[in-house]
Image (cartoon, rainbow, N blue to C red; front, side, top):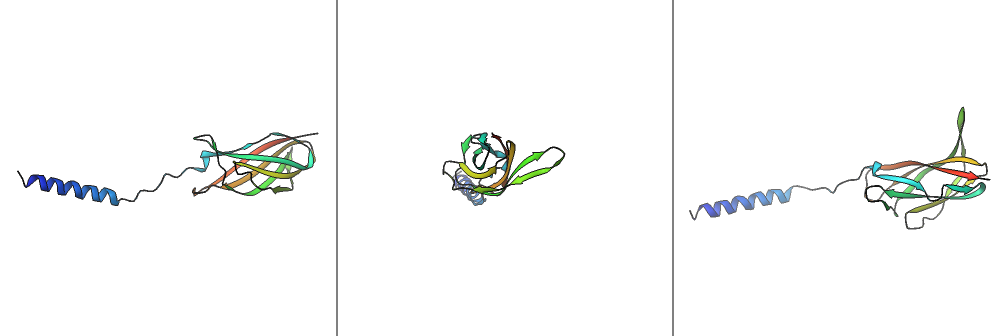
Amino acid sequence: MTLAIPRLALCGALVAAVVASIPVSPAQADPADYAFEAVQAHVAADGQAKVAVRLVHLKDNKRVPDALIFQTRMEMPMAGMAPMATRITAQKPTGDGDYPFIADLSMPGTWTLLLSAKVQGEPGTVTGKVSFMAMP
């Protein structure tokens, strides 16, 4: 009986060592777990309109302050025609998850900002569309 206990202890130690050696990778979020939102959906129609988006992690509703925003395009949908693109320039992020831009929204109406972002630690690219209403 004294031999059974050491064998059992040895087997338990061996199982623990094997389990401990299995690589565990952290859970990766899906790009669909994130969304862009307009900070203020109505803006003044202006050649130097200030617009801003917020990137939010949907599962915990927290802002993402350290994303790298790229591939920005501001356009106005045109009935029966290709969308009309306009100039947009990224400004320095606020650090709290809001990302400001200056855009030429001199024509009143609905404008759509299309953008992509890389979120630190996530392998996928987050893409989204945010609508703004340029008011006269």
